[in-house]
Image (cartoon, rainbow, N blue to C red; front, side, top):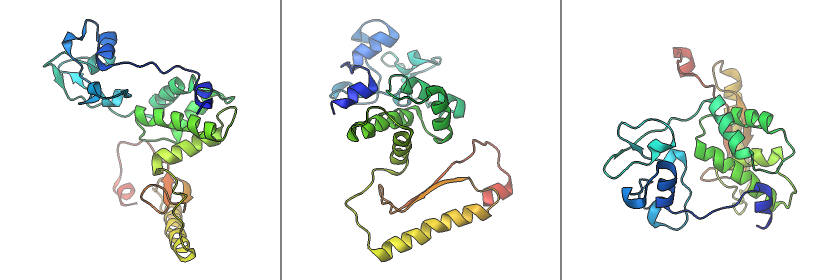
Length: 223
């Protein structure tokens, strides 16, 4: 745990909801705090842009996330494309201790995280730092980032869940079926990884890299 601040190289200030409102929007606390319900009353809590609520008729940017009393409406923040994800990764990679080229790393990580929100990207960077700290590493490696993505996508590894040989064989056949089907289907998303390690609620999983595409042909939908 002591290594985590050294790997991240930032302080963790304690802020309350009305301080955030005051800092981003201006004015005092009388306007109220419009972060998700209950956050202002809880113990220290992270607030991501994905969780923000916008003002009716408000514009973009952080100012629209925190509105005055009676002015708020739900605002959906769309997930970023690959360029947007790379930009968010560059922000979160900034304070991390690693010898990897952060510009190239941000592009690679963005390509491996389709559909990730800003909060997901933040979790990946935090998890990578935690994994490196648990391994007593001096810096965060590329493998740590890959492990972090795997954890965010599929959940925590269940080391205590031991499968019987026949169960492992069944899971292996099942996941291999995903790989074989993806190989022969022309329009299937590229397969990145297949695992038979129990994670989350599953006994194995197949990780794909879907293209950022908005229009699909009939053949693509059928595949």
